[in-house]
Image 1 (cartoon, helix red, strand yellow):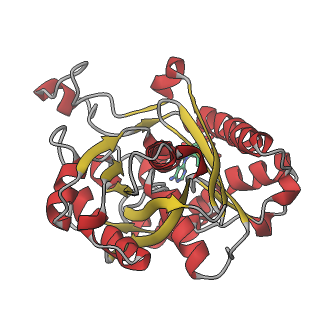
Image 2: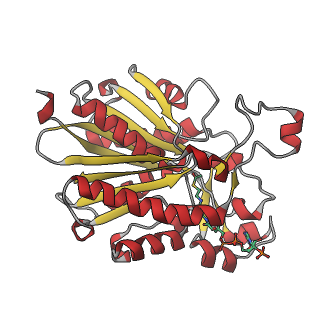
Amino acid sequence: MSETYRAAISGLGAYLPEKVLTNFDLEKIVETTDEWIRTRTGICERHVAASSQSSSDLALPAAQEALKNAGLTAQDLDLIIVATISPDMLFPSTACYLQKKLGATCGAFDMAAACSGFPYAIAVAEGFVKSGLYQNVLVVGAEAITKFIDWKDRSTCVLFGDGAGAAVVSRSTDGHGILASYLGADGNQSEILQIPAGGSMIPPSEESLRNGLHYLRMQGPELFKIAVKTMEQAVLEVLKHENLTVHDIHCLIPHQANHRILKAVADRLELPLEKIYINVDRYGNMSSASTAVALYEAVTKGAIKKGDYVVLVAFGGGLTWAANLIKW
Ligand code: ACO
């Protein structure tokens, strides 16, 4: 019986905090220029959460909009998964905070796969729905990541922004929906991108604070090469699963870390850049929220139509990488 089920996205939502920080604003904070940031990354501005806003606060309006667009209420949900690396607390999970704020009563847990969190969580939701176990799973990518940024470090602070995107993954029987997902990871490269302190390996201490170990650290140039390679690989893997080729893709929704990375992925895949949805210029890298917000915008703006083949692809800390192939 369960084999006839497919998991499809039935509603999308997004939320960006009000405050916008432009490259010109950053010029006043660190030694950088709008020109450097734009030419090296493609970023012009990013949104920043208010001091009172945690990740679950950003997740809430995105989730409410996704539920509304799916024609569902919080009571219809069977599970909530929040992908985040900037959780409200170490525990309880941000998903539990969101469950409370939504007024839902279902199970809830967080997914820690850094910038790949949204495609990872979509794959998990797909599994629950396809198996017949659940009917409606809420997946949210939510990050108040700027709270973990060292605003004195120009090599990282210009790159990141805050936001949230949400998708309801529901049972579908019309053949449309998620066709394949691919998950990859390499724990040997964990030091390339991390927030070293605050967990059980380096608990918070005066020394960890003094050394700034609670801030995000990144080896940018190394990551650049890996990002291009792993995103290309993940896209090819999900296409292979359905005997499709790059030419079949109508819209690629990639993680938005750097415009040059997206250009390099397009070149390697021989995919026209116009088929790639890009919003890194307005939001910067929102980690797990990036693909979620990009998917929401692509659908809202009409860049994705019924029957299109859509590929979500991301890479991030872990290292992790992932892709989902969706027949819209
Ligand atoms: N403004 C001005 N100069 C800067 C800045 C800045 N904001 N940041 C660095 N520089 C300087 C450096 O100090 C360096 O100077 P030097 O040559 O005198 O030493 C010079 O610019 C070049 O630095 P590079 O690091 O070589 O610059 P690069 O062209 O590689 O761009 C960047 C850096 C943008 C970080 C790029 O490597 C990149 O995008 N990497 C991938 C990042 C990424 O994908 N992150 C994903 C995170 S996902 C997650 O899971 C959270």
